[in-house]
Length: 400
Length: 203
Image (cartoon, rainbow over all chains, first blue to last red; front, top):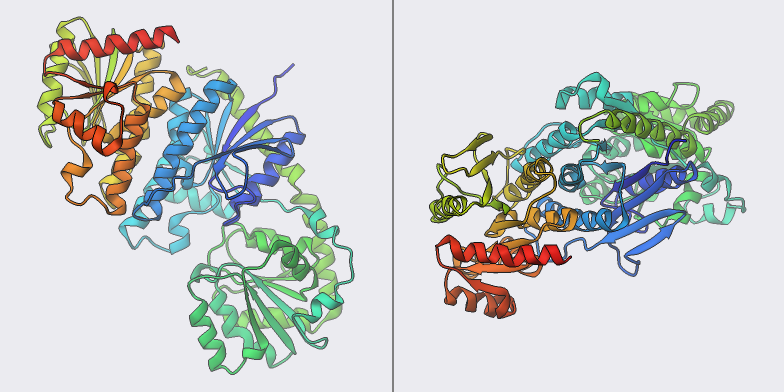
């Protein structure tokens, strides 16, 4: 009988520490892997009032001192935090017995992952959630170049690299010059039950955000350039010319002031609500009641927000780019529009708002696709296949 | 006796006084039947055995672009760990000690200790407080935190003068008996390695 695989996941965030998409990804993936018989240790940064060791849904979570001395800047902090992560992970492996695979998520844990690989001579699997060059369009500064080279180093050291879309596979392959047979495409997942479990009447909840006659158009994401939020803001008057709607913007970021100024200049303060950060229960409910969910990104490795909306049965309008080009089937599971084009975006939004039959068709199809392709059990199974492939290759290597 | 020495400078790369000092010491140790593996930085990677029998492994930084010495050092460490682990596995897990010169490769020394059970000596040539006047910027404090980690995790600390011994006690509150004053003669260093080897055998 094949022995069970033990994996050590390295991630800079894990619930309740949530900064971006890596935290829920690592949580749901690990939880489903545990159900499939994989033993999972997650080594992650600490968080106030959270234990340094606990078992969450079968996942052994180890929280390390995330380096709290002053550090000069963000990347220096990342590298210093990695030193602590590596030290604690090394202690764990030595005390608790062996691991089969080290699974690192993004450059944020590159140093620790690479060091541990060589110290224990174990295979390193890397999931690339995003890239520095993708976030910035091009490398402008020394810091950006340093992060880019750290990513290149991590990809070089990896036994295999997982990306969440074919778009990311070709992106990673070309920027880091990786061979074809080193990459696996495993999509990101969404937990449908979180949405299906919300069964209460949401009429009162809806009334907090919009008038009954206003349709709700929802944007969820950081207010940063790569997310294309400025494209949506420029589309607001074009949408309102044909439909009565309220735009709800959830998230914050450095573009906030600038966007508020534009909205005020258009005299549409009463139609655009900047919500800032929102607690999860409210966000889930808002996604359920949104008449349209918009993801206008310019760069999007995957587009988890679109997938969440599809699970919440909210029809999506996405820019035809990155991972979203693969998730959404135009006119079947959503509407695809030209990236960086407010006219096209407004057209897409109105197409849904003005045709109830079309809206129903889109959201029912979308929900079915999410069920069939993007459930965490399916994704964990694919990940486990990658683990097994690596283990079998490793067992024939001179490190075994 | 088989040891690994970490030093960020080693001839022909000379930055300060540490380079020649480490080389002379390594030759002496080799003449006393110590198997010495020096791991150091150079612009191009290489592996050589000197006439004295000292093995030198030079690694280069996997990340070429940096915003400062701190990040440069921190991405170099996993590469140092890579070759140090190779020395360890090639020697069938028989390494008596790591000797780390100054703060640069303390991260690697600490991880080798936790992961592979190799004790280390922290050999201090100079301290951040003495190198940088008013060493109170986040950059200096980060380097000082690495020095602190080295003092805390090392089995023993080696210094060249009673003055430095007192300074380490004053700045880092390290127990004085943990800090050994050594001459530039290899006998002293060897006796420290022997103390550590006793340590690791009793484990």
